Structures are given as structure tokens and as C-alpha cells.
Image (cartoon, rainbow over all chains, first blue to last red):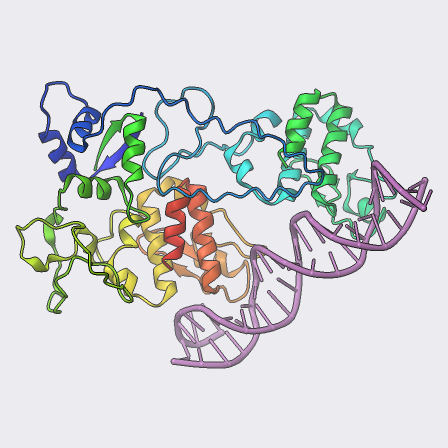
Length: 209
Length: 209
DNA sequence: GATCTGATCGAAGGGATCGTTG
DNA sequence: TCCAACGATCCCTTCGATCAGA
């Protein structure tokens, strides 16, 4: 079911076309528009599970262009959410702090972000929130010359050149940022592995960047 | 405004009948059902002294390539004299705000404006009117140094130099104004995205500046 | 701070590409 | 020599705000 808004006079006109008592708006409109009921319940577009283009190196520009004019927009969750949606305005969930990475990577806002640094840092922030202790011990991962995490900007700066440190929001940590997307994924993968996350989740999260 | 519920397939069918980008459900249904808009209260029409070509067009400000076979398109019903032209869209900016951005960007006056700052602010004003709550949370968007929205002039002034704050009419908000047109479009795009508008509408509105 | 709009161009950020290392 | 992993240079995009133009 979708909900749309109609101007009063139009609504009144449609209501006036009622033929049988108890007809729904849909019934009336079907008759007026000559649209027969379609039986096959449209199984909501799945659009989940991206095929994983093997493409070794990141790339994935993630084209967004929603061509059709008005229409749908993704369902908030696979759950059979009846209400929601509306003409133009889509209900925005996002209450700032997703409780878990699982939630984060499904969050609409998050998915719409095209800047990978932003996602990178948000993920780290949530990972820390989920388990500061584990996060803490896992931050010892590092590269050949650079260290990836530290509790101060200067530490990161002194371990390489132009590492572009950024603070991880709501966290005492800083991270290296001057890396390509592939490396950002690696860092997340390594970190989560050390923290003990499952393969599946790790993949899903890395993939989300 | 009335709200009705439609079955998904019917909704999709109606959405598929969109002719102009940004059309509201009402606009589409009026066309399909051949119900002309009731010029509510029918205020204004003052500036009606101009000749106004009698054709169906209405919009189309310039370069219209009137191809021969024009045919139908919303005939405002034979009732009123042929001149009518505008539908409810013609609301005059001052005092009465168009009920929706969809309407605003189709408004004749609006489209004739060449000053983008004016359009920019009018759009913001209507967006606020449509959903103050969403607008409120969406105003946190900002640039690298500047903040774009605030509830006082001073806030904006202190976040950059020569930001040229302007109050958004009928709103507690102020906006940055010292930007090129491209950025004004971006700001609208970002704001509407956060407010949950569909891609199509967002594009249409941004485009209208 | 007082004319106002907004394009132009300089500054900063993002991250792919390519060089380096083991 | 070749390969895989890593580093960081540098091109492109995004943002700011000066100043040309009206």
C-alpha cells in the first residue's frame, strides 16, 4: 500500500464516483482509470546482495541515477513494512547512532554517501562503540612504515609522510586516511578480524565502503 | 489535502503516467481523470491584463517548438473562458506560498525570475513550510568552513567571511548566500536529500534555479 | 560591513595511480 | 625478475570568497 496526498477538491471528486458502498479509493480509481487489478503481489524489489563484481580494485563508482520520475525508493527493511513511504517525502530513519555495524551498513544515509573516507571513519567509530576493549587491542595493525591507528595526530604524522590523520568521532583514536579505497577495506578487514568478527560480517562491512 | 491509500500496482501505474518532472499525484490524476484544478479561492489574477496566447501551453517560457499536433493536454474544461491558462499553479509568491515545491517550480512568476538568490530562498521557504521538522534536522549540512543554515545572522557570519546571510522568509532560518549558482543547487540537493525527497524531485528543483 | 549577484579562480580534500619495498 | 603489499604523489573534485560586472 502506498499513500498519496490529494487536493481536497480532487479527493471529493473521486469520492463522488463511488459506485458500491465500501469501495476503497483503489477500487474507484481502478474503475475510473480502467486499470484492472493485478494479482501477482509484487514481491518487493530485492536489490540486495550485490553480485560482487570481481573487479580487483575498488573502482565501483556506484551510479545512483534513479531514472523513473516519482515512484518508490527502497524499502527501509525487508520486513513487510506497510505504511511508510508517501508521495515525495520518504521517511528518514537515521537517528544518528546506529547501534551496530550491521545496522550502520544498512542505513540509507550511510549507503548514499559517496565519500569513502566518511564511511571508513563512521565504521571505525561504530566498531569502537561496540567493543572498545577489542578495538583497543586490534589497533596495533600497521603497514610497512606507517602505523594506522594512534591516540594522537602527531604519532601518525611521524610514522610516514602525508598520512592525513583524522580523528575517529566519539573515540580517543586517530586513523590514517591517505590511502586508496582498497587499503581502507584492508584496514577494516584486518581490524575486524583481530576483533573477532565473523568472516561474513567482515566481508559485508568491507564491501560497504 | 486528503490522504488516500492505493495498492502498490495502482500506485505504480499512476506514477508511470508522470508527464512533467515533479508532478504531484494530484497533478497526474487530474490529467488522467480530466478534472481541472479548482482555483481555490481564486485570489489574484490581477496581472491578468496581458494578452496571453490562448493555447494550452501555460508553461513554456521560450523556445517551445510548437509542433503541429499539439492536441489535448489538460483542457481546463470548457467552463471558463478560453484564456484561463494557469491552473492552481499561479499562486503569487508574496503572502500566499505555493503549497508545495512541485508547484513552486512550475509557477510562472517563479520561472520568470532570473535572480537565482531569489529562487533559492523561495525554494527554501517552501521546503520549510512543507516539513519544518525534516527541514530542521536537515539544516546541519555544511561546507568545509562555512555552515549553510542557522537561526541567526551572526552564526553564519562567524563561520566564514562575507557569507552574505539572508533570512528565509516565513522561517526562523537564515542561509548563506555568497555562492555561485552551482553551489546553491548543491545546497538544495543536499538539503532535500536529507529531508527524504526523491531523486527526481530533487533534480527538478535543483534544476529550476 | 553596507549595493548586490554570482562567476571565476585559488585552496583544500579525496583517493586512484603509480612508484617503492620486501 | 616477477609478484604482492604498501606508500604517498599528484590529478581531479569540492568548497570558499574575492572581485568583476551591472
